[in-house]
Image (cartoon, rainbow, N blue to C red; front, side, top):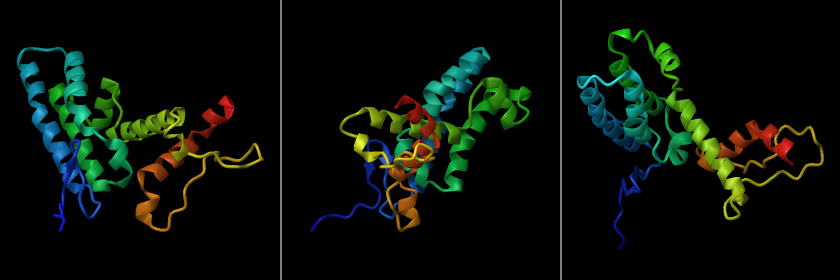
Length: 186
């Protein structure tokens, strides 16, 4: 008999046997919050705001984006809010009394919301897969003769909402949303 593992951790990503991402999100946020100590220490030493933002990007934000191509399309709104709260907290720490609100802090710092970054990282991954001979078959082109077809990538059929939100189908939709790039390149 094989042992059933309810929450295996593979390459730092927690996979739950019910295909939910709550444990992974909790682990991501815990890790990111623990790394924010570096911001507090840098502030004690009088680091300028530009250095604090750089420290945040390199030591905290990367934990919030770890393996996001796998889980981004499947997380709940609560999971996304929890991850976004990490960046809000970091910006509040960095700007201290000058912090007005999250949108203003994003504008001043030149950062984008983490949800938007994850979407862009998924799109970048899909574009990279198109360039690789071994992975380009995940994103097949539609066989259409009309040049005004809005979507040029075939989207795999899905009968369940879980399958419709799966990473490959999600990235197929992202590529179709940016299909003007590929149409002009052909």
